[in-house]
Image (cartoon, rainbow over all chains, first blue to last red; front, side):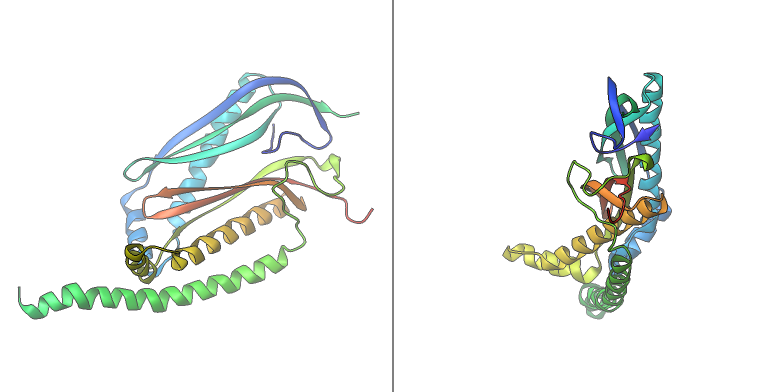
Length: 107
Length: 152
């Protein structure tokens, strides 16, 4: 499954557009990460705990999007975009969406 | 409470935190900026654009794939304190500006690093998104990595 965030893939041609696919997940952090964040708010810098949490969540949202694309019998997803929003105190929703297509080699 | 305790709580403690924030934070920031300079120099030969088309002579046999880099960044106590005062007066918050620039540069460095680790040497369609999560701000950079044939 090829995944890109452009509309075209070099060397491939889109023969069928299957439609919009999406995947999302809502993740909450645990108290340990809050503690790290509290300390980091004094020194500043990267919150590695949060970064890992959000990377993992985004990966899961992408997997769910790809599962939908596989169901539609597509072999690529193009123009992938992301959206993140805080839904509750300490929880964030990761949303990934794109267009599932069928591609063949060009020429 | 005794006046001495009040003095400690309302003036002494914030001053301590500001001092820690200024010293430790400043040191961490200059270390990060030095690391960024080194990494950006290393990755200077990976062109990155926000164009929808693939710039350069594309090697179609290598394909293309999406790459992402993200950072969650928190401000130090001094920056937050300065920002709170500045927001009373209005105007440019330069303390936060430097923080956001750092986060953006780091996210772009991570995108280029992932592109390279997948065997590609260029990135197209860069998009940058922000979100506030809990105590920090997440900067997400995403793009499509592809391969260009050098020379020709």
